[in-house]
Image (cartoon, rainbow, N blue to C red; front, side, top):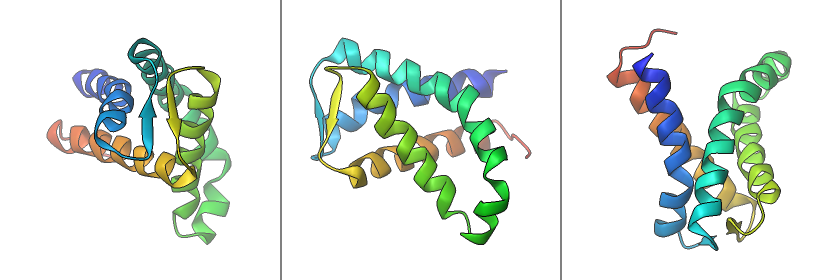
Length: 116
């Protein structure tokens, strides 16, 4: 339970933090960026497992790169849905943010000893 709460919090906090420290991610409104982070955390919790299940066979053929692209697409799309939150210079910056989010979520899994 604690791991789920921490993963949610890390996902929600990653967008404003990445906007502060990454050159290609521009923060427009802190309030909207926090809202974007919460929407992204809900998307990672609810939508991501379904998409991963549907794409599991194709992902095997791409050696896991499809999951990375799907996570970046999720970040990019969520940023487009919440106006005046953050702007990515290009898709690669959305990919970098999704990698930061996944690193944080993996760190929580390791610290809470979650077995998959």
